[in-house]
Length: 475
Ligand code: JFZ
Image 1 (cartoon, rainbow, N blue to C red):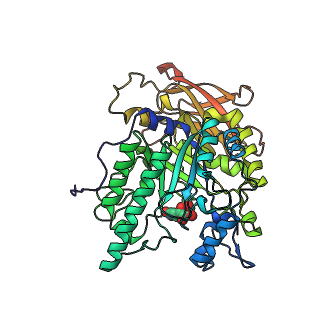
Image 2: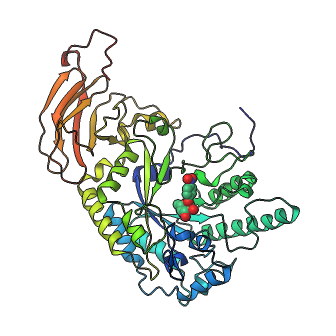
Image 3: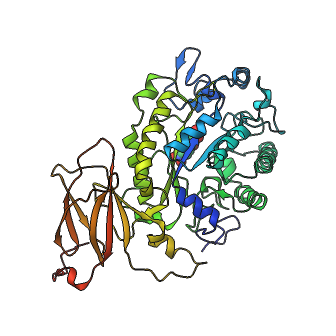
């Protein structure tokens, strides 16, 4: 163990009510909205096939020119209640909103820079209105904050001289002031989602990342902070130099997921974030963006994979420059929501199904109270005696084999009592192949993943003969 001042706090997985609620939510909506939604990927007639929120940098726009966009931030179609309704109907249980992205523009009237909604025609507290609207729909709220800032004169990517060091010290004071201001103005928020922390300047300031997490938790008890904020004494990010997770959950999976069989990720909480387009977080109004747009079935598959591995999925929406949602994103939310209305219990309040190995054709999830890794990782709570691996397991079928047959390998000690379709309760007959394996006809394809409810019980000695040959791996 390397001694560290700014590494993980050593308390392990959080099991307090706030963290448990966040974990059980499983599905959140990410919102990237700012000035970049106005040019939407095109600058002076040239469309840049790169993330819209990077346009200032990718099109080489000066600070002055970019700042002038604030005059067009008129909120003509801004309807936060509609955003919140859309998220709720989709099945999202929380929202993470950009308060300030890399371009430095602030969605709240901050006292610490003029570059904010206060300098736009309406002057309204846009962030506050968004948070209120989501809370009114019963969603929890989290704040995204980019430490990286292309607008602030004191931001540095690296600190190589005394003057850089002085400037960056001033910058960190500015960021601290802003973050404490956010905590004071919006004390109901459940989490902070830090970004833009990968530069050498931040990695050399693990002390600050450690301190700001502490300060925010002091101001808002129980608040949840992602690992992307943190750097340790040696600049190690997410995980400290001893391999321990910093922050409350791992947030490094971005536009990718852990391999479906990689159960090592169930050792800690994590959240992946995903774009609806191939590669833009901000609204990108182009054929390029539309070509890569994901379908509802792809999103649901990502959600199923995420939950089966004990993670949360933060699905991004990029509202348009006038503040309205793009119809294509509303339509996607509706379709995902229709699936969630029926199959939500396979996602919400669920996690990995202990002992059920990745079957190739889909993902298993189980209600959290039956999920061994979570129970075992709760040192504050007495071990519950119900180690009996019985109850409901959800099988989310995303790939039907050409044979039309699904093979299920049952965990040791588990018997399958019945298989039902989640949608209408119809029972699907199955055939035991041996004591640990059953086979059944795959459900007819519908274009969306099908959820099967597996009713399980304890396998008694009478449930079948066990294989005498130890070389035959049954489960
Ligand atoms: C960052 C931002 O630059 C981007 O605009 C968006 O806000 C996204 C959620 O976060 O982009 C990243 C951050 C980290 C990685 C890749 C892109 N990464 O760790 O691979």
